[in-house]
Image 1 (tube, helix red, strand yellow):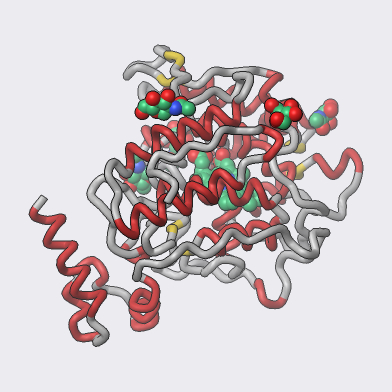
Image 2: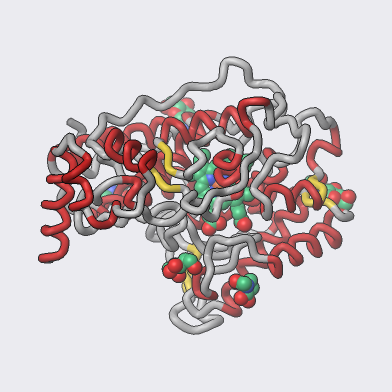
Length: 383
Ligand code: HEM
Ligand SMILES: *[C@@H]1O[C@H](CO)[C@@H](O)[C@H](O)[C@H]1NC(C)=O
Ligand SMILES: *[C@@H]1O[C@H](CO)[C@@H](O)[C@H](O)[C@H]1NC(C)=O
Ligand SMILES: *[C@@H]1O[C@H](CO)[C@@H](O)[C@H](O)[C@H]1NC(C)=O
Ligand SMILES: *[C@@H]1O[C@H](CO)[C@@H](O)[C@H](O)[C@H]1NC(C)=O
Ligand SMILES: *[C@@H]1O[C@H](CO)[C@@H](O)[C@H](O)[C@H]1NC(C)=O
C-alpha cells in the first residue's frame, strides 16, 4: 500500500511540474530518451477519449507498404506483443512505431492497413483498451506493461498491455504458446510448423477456413491435454475463433479473386506471423473485412468455454462469462465483459477514471454488430 501511494504522489509531482528537472522523481520513467521523455510529458495526462473513427472513405484494396509506410526494424525500446496484425502496423508506421497508441489510432490503423471492418475494429480495440490499457491517459501498449502509458489509475486495474496473459491474450493461439509454457506472445516455430502441417493436410499447402477449423479445434485439444492451467472461457472463447479467420480475411492480397482469394500461402503467412511485416507489393483486403468464416469454423467442431482445473485433462465447462455457442453468443460475451470482467478490474472508480470508463464502455457497445440487439449494461452508471 505504502509503495502505491508514494508512487502516486511522485507521479502527481511529475505531472504538475512543467520543468524537466522534477521529472526524474518518477523513477519508472527513468531511462527514457529525450524524445520519449517529451512524448511522456505531453501525453501522460488525463484525457477525454477521442471519438471512435468511422468507416474509411475509400475502402477498396490499396498498396500497404507505400512511401509513408515503409517497414523499419524494431528499435530497442519498441514494444511488440501477441498480435501479428498490430505488430505489423507498428513496424510500418500505421501505428506509432514504439507500440504505444490511443484506441482511435489503433482503429484507424487497422482499417487503413488491413481494411478491418469498422465495427469489429471498434469492438476489439475498446475491449482491449478496457482490459489492458490506461483509460485515464487514453493509451494502450500493444506489448508489455510500460510507463509510457502513464501512471496506473488505481490499484486493481492492471493496465498491463496486450501482452498480459488472461485479460485479452489467452491460450490456444495458433502461432504463440500458452503462457504456462513460459512465453505467451512471441512467434513460436514449433507451433508455426504445426500451422504449416495442418495447411498441408487440410488445405493442399494453403491456410483456409477448412484448415482453420481443424487447427482451432486441435489447439484446444492440445491445451486440455498439455496445459494444467489451460483456460478457454469468456472473451477468449470468442477471440480464439475470431483470430483464426483473420489470416484468411486480411493476410491475403485483396487483388486475388475466387477460390484463390481464400487460400493463404505459407510464405505470406510467415512474413506476417514471424517478421511482422507486409509482403512487398501487398494490397490490403478488397473490402472491409472481419470474422467472415467464423460460423463455419465453429460449427465444424463446436466447443464450450471453460478451463482445466489445475491438472491436464480436467476441462470443466464455465459459461458464466458467456458462450459463443449459445443462442445470443456475441451478446452474452459482451455482458460478461461489461457486467463482470471490467467492473472486477475497476471496483469503485471515481472522477476522471469513472467518466472515461463510462465513455469507453459506450464505445464498446457502439462497436457491437447492430443486428445482435444486445442489451446495454451500465456497471458504472451512465453519466
Ligand atoms: C483492432 C485491434 C486489434 C487488437 C486490439 C488485437 C489484439 C490481439 C491480441 C491481444 C491477440 C492475442 C490473442 C491470443 O492469441 O492470445 C491477437 C491475436 C491475433 N490478431 Fe489481433 N488485434 C487487433 C487487430 C488485428 C488485425 C487488424 C489483424 C489482422 C489483419 C489481427 C490478427 C491477429 C491474429 C491472426 C491473431 C492470432 C495470433 C495467433 O493465434 O497466433 N489482429 N490480436
Ligand atoms: C513453443 O510451443 C511449444 C508447444 O506449446 C512449447 O512446448 C515450447 O516450449 C514453445 N517454445 C518456446 C521457445 O517458447
Ligand atoms: C507472458 O510472457 C512474458 C514474457 O515471457 C512473461 O514476462 C510474463 O510473465 C508471461 N505472463 C504469464 C502470465 O505467464
Ligand atoms: C481448403 O483447401 C482444400 C484443399 O485445396 C479444399 O479442398 C477446401 O475446399 C478448402 N476450403 C476452403 C473453405 O476454401
Ligand atoms: C449483472 O450483474 C449483477 C450482479 O452483479 C446481476 O444482478 C445482473 O443480473 C447482471 N446482469 C446481467 C444482464 O447479466
Ligand atoms: C432485433 O430487434 C428487432 C426489432 O426489435 C427484431 O425485428 C429483430 O428480429 C431482432 N434481431 C435479433 C437477432 O434478435
